[in-house]
Image (cartoon, rainbow, N blue to C red):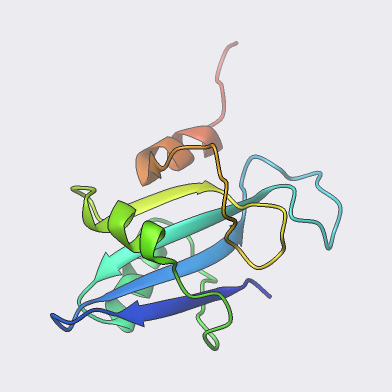
Length: 121
């Protein structure tokens, strides 16, 4: 099951964070964090956040519990992004966040491009 969580902001909106299997890492061994991405969604409520992901083709996305809520740095990153939907590879600590992460956040369209087949190359 994917780790995830949410944080309700003072204005009533929520930030949902989920660790999902990366579409690019089909051969990653089970039980490892290799091939896992951390997805952040800013929405009016939790149901709308999950609907945004499902509309992008991530049909089996559920939020059960609050085991890995977004950190303050993650909340700041998603609030400053115009789409309110970003991702990066998940750190190796298993829960989802680390103190020193060197990878920058990517817009969700970059993840969707990684899933597209390279026709003719």
